[in-house]
Length: 228
Image (cartoon, rainbow, N blue to C red; front, side, top):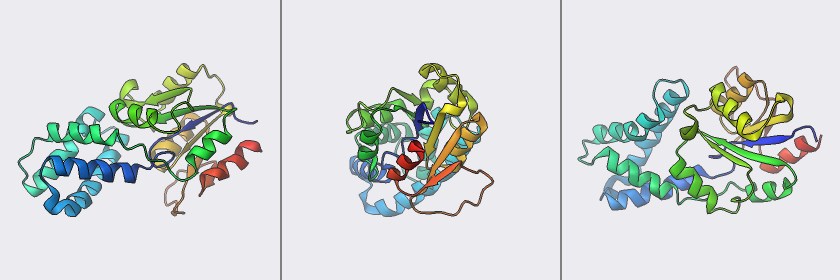
């Protein structure tokens, strides 16, 4: 096969982050007595999330700062009395319980059982490790590369340096990066000189200058690429 190893993003590629986030928010709203305006809080939080994760990708904020800052912004908007640190810790704990998979993820990883697979994800160890460990994919990955452990995040090339070192890789042409984010997964892979596959289940228009090597709408379509 063309590729020696497949590097998968986690959230919204193999794991259903939307479901996990909704689960965690409902749990933490209950714990902090915020169910009265839960839908409104969630809509605002998602907007804040888009902004702040973009700031992280551009190097404008650190992951440690993001952990608390997103809830600071939410509580400031609604003049809420809660401590963002306490709320953030509880949210991450509940998020780590959300081992929901994207449709076809388990079947794909089973079909790729002779390939070397690894995860490379932006996020927090306390979330990603339990989510993966309690999922049907727990034994599928040779390495789980988490930005919090490396000090870098996609699209920075340093996180790929870290992954290549952990996996003992030397040839970029034997590696494929698969992910849903053009600005994180695909841009990061492009910058590092490895082939990329954009997982685009909603068939969104690519309005950027980031060009993936491949594009798929369903996870099982990756098998056609791997077998070429």
